Amino acid sequence: MLNSAFISIGTNVDRERHCREAADRLATLFEELYFSDPIETEAVGKVKEAAPYINQVAAGFTGLDRETLQERLKAIERELGRQPEDKGSGRVPIDLDLLIWNEEVLRPNDMRQDYVRLCLPSLQAKISCTNLSARCLFE
Image (cartoon, rainbow, N blue to C red):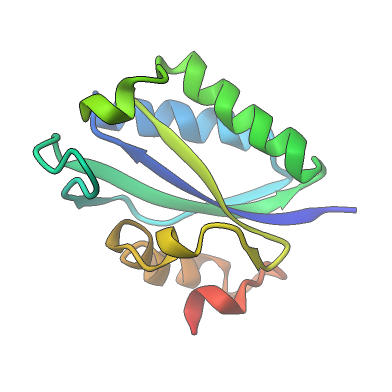
């Protein structure tokens, strides 16, 4: 059985390279995978003076279970240089978060942020002709 997943991608360090490398690694975990157009956003949260981010949302089908996918996302972050202290310092080489799993919203606060919301129109255009659905994204 294939599971549907929506993942947020964010980086503010060597942004184009980290987005590209994250996309390449994510593609190995999915049967089908679609990406929103990249957008630039300002930092939110505790470290507002951090460098601007490039963000995307990816959506696709995977044969992995939820726990395994989340473990693989964290492994990709480590492979691309993410350290536990990075977010507090405002330096984020890559941030991969599982937003939605089989239509269950796992990160409702992220869903309201510009770094997700502004990615959705371009993603919707790319997945509208597939069986991939997350009505909660586009309502």
